[in-house]
Length: 134
Image 1 (cartoon, rainbow, N blue to C red):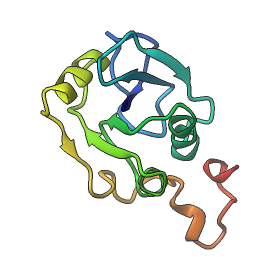
Image 2 (cartoon, helix red, strand yellow; image 1 turned 180 degrees about the vertical axis):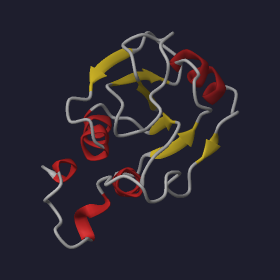
Image 3 (cartoon, rainbow, N blue to C red; image 1 turned 90 degrees about the vertical axis):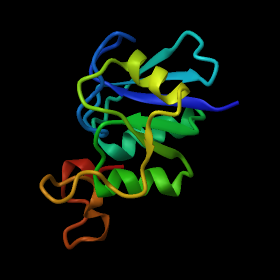
Image 4 (tube, rainbow, N blue to C red; image 1 turned 60 degrees about the horizontal axis):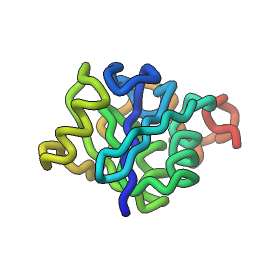
C-alpha cells in the first residue's frame, strides 16, 4: 500500500503546506485510503533529513510546493515520487488533489539557484554548510 507524505508548516491537516520541501517543520503521512494522518517533526529542517524520514516511514509519494536540486536528488535516489501542489493550500486539500489526480509529477527541481540547499554534496567545500550534515 502506498504512503503519501505532505510537507507541512503546522501539525494539522487543515494547516498550510510548507512553501519549501526542506524547510517543512512537519511531514504529514497517510496511506492511499486517506486514513488518519500521522505527523512527524522534521528536526533537521533540510531536504536530506526530510527524505530520510520519508524512507523510514515507507513513503512512496511526497507532496510539496517547491523542492531544490539537492532534496530532489535525494528523493529520486530513494525512489520516491514527487508531486507539486499549489502554494498556500492546506495539507488536506493537497491530499484531496492527489486522490483526484490533480497534481503534477515532478521531473526536476522546482527551485533553481538561490539558496544553499543540499546540492553542496558535489560542490567545492561540500559538507561545510549546515544543511550538508549527516
